[in-house]
Image (cartoon, rainbow over all chains, first blue to last red; front, side):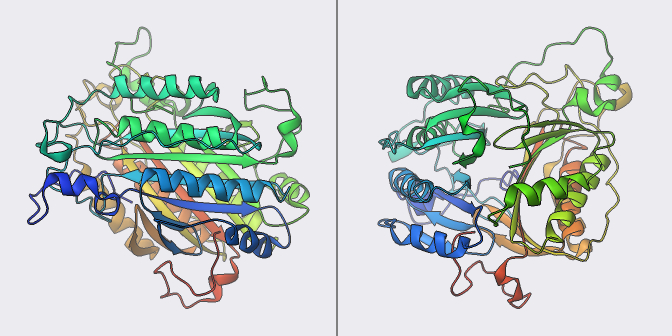
Length: 243
Length: 243
């Protein structure tokens, strides 16, 4: 928590700003993931699904509330897509809660890499899974001041949330996942791979001009309500209960 | 999503700033809640639990990803506590995902109540449930500029994130729920009522000097791992799988 506490950025001895943004773990690029399977044998279902998912290039620490996954944006999206697809393939109703973070490796007090500035990263490749997902997305640019030094020591781009946020929206429209807005979130629908890629891409795109960016994505797989017309995105489907 | 897009605050015709902060719905006080029950008959379990929970004073809109609940901080905490307690009482492993927001009733573009400033609210009363919860908490103060006018038209307090964030930490310590920090989140444990109250109180306390504050809380109930010693909060419990 408290990732946004405005701790004065203190210069970091040793690695250069470029080093700080280049290494995903040093820069605090990672996710916390909670997968909930609506089944009596959820432990077995999860264990079997996880056995299919490669963790190459990632650091994992599993807990009773969520699992921390640290690594590059591309490895994170691959892991999330593979995990979601493996769970969707079970046919069970599954919820995936994904909390992405970058630029704030600190904990109770956010200790940013001194002068690291934003991390320029490519939008990771998307994998189509053939599985429908509905999701709600929140994206939080948390740093506003222009960093002293950008990636590789170059002058960083001027911070411009709206530019990057509109780029994130445009990317969502290109992926065909954007369904509009609801209270506090944006509604996404489409192939699971595209839905996850939308959130990761938005987080990466905003991260090009903002050092510390978090994003929260709540995904529903195999919901009994996904037989509802694709247009029914107003969050008020008859007969629904809390999912 | 995009709650943090820095839309210029435009004066609002009609209601005064005091009115904008006084009414919870006008100010955008609410939550999105997803409850996941690890059981084959999850729909029946949820339906029965929801039937026990009062929605007095709240506006609800239920969807296939989450349910929006709007209303005062006190009514929201009562609803969350009653819902969590009813689900915990089923004995099933349940995950609750709670996304709190205040001060940004807009949607794709955050349209803050013009000059509303922060909403001063009391820390809601806590109800002890007798149910153990483990949770991970993130708190995001999203507005920094001093508002033109504070609650009731009075001059607002000077924004001071650290003061309020430390107040939130102190409150968590008083409630005995604070367990330390993990990547991107704070670990909370204790009675479900205290864990929920910790997140709501932190959100309210930071909201006294920051207009737009969101908080994300991931709660685990009846986890098979909660037999683990209370000290085991390092998120790396042997034999765990993604929850």
